[in-house]
Image (cartoon, rainbow, N blue to C red; front, top):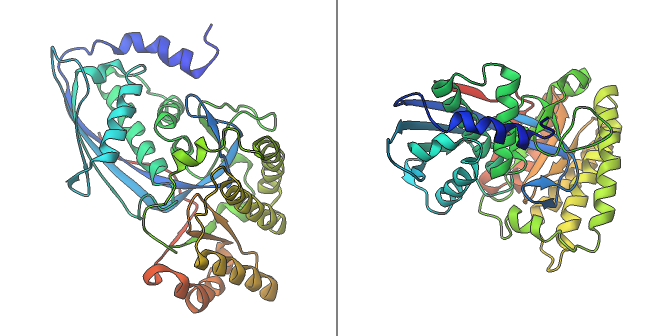
Length: 369
């Protein structure tokens, strides 16, 4: 009896080793980034979280990927050309090649395929807006579409998304949350069944209407690449002096956040979302060696957001991912007041006054195939 998703997909891989004849085609997906409300920071092999997390997928911050493929009879090994914004992508292309090598365990037909991958983002990459999540989410969805086209498998939408979530996690842990629209949970927890470290599960049937139209204005404080990558940041959680306390805190906060998302308590949501964001960056600051991804304007934005909430009583708050940019969260009903505040008080803090007005999205969209 198969007990894990890995067991299941390894068992299934035997039937995916020999395609029924030559094949060719094009598949493509547009996949959103996601914003974690309960953060995961620290992992164990292979791309498994040290604590569970809760996130929502965005509407506008997306990665688009198309994969042209054809069979190469008699060929063994990954054949790949990778382009970002129409140009060959060096370092990320190598990361994709390494990812495909891992995926071969579950999709052995890739060993006999020539792949040409084109990708682009609607937002700056490597700045802490989870571009790896949207990228590997789109790629995993495309690989599952290839499997479906070639072998006729994954006909059930649930089975398709579950495998895409599992595969995307191998490239970027948080990518497993991007394949579902709305809110999702990733990581084993007693607070919700089913749950697993191997893939995300959707949460939308448990979300109060107060949060179903949550808006997220992303303040682009700095668009350049981060000084310390998320990969390195996760590694620095190994032996971190506060790691055990953080993992315990995250488990407790996750249970509390699931309750809040169900009961619609906007004040409690603000307190917990901000605590999680600042705790994430506290882990970075207190790593060995420590590092700081927030910038002076990150702190200025946080201060102004908190004063605005105190002065107006409006349900606004912030969260941060692993970077300097600020996600300003608020319900759609107060969007006019909040966006007026953003234009008058926060845009000056952004790089070239740049921001993205975003919010909870419906999830990935298949482009063709």
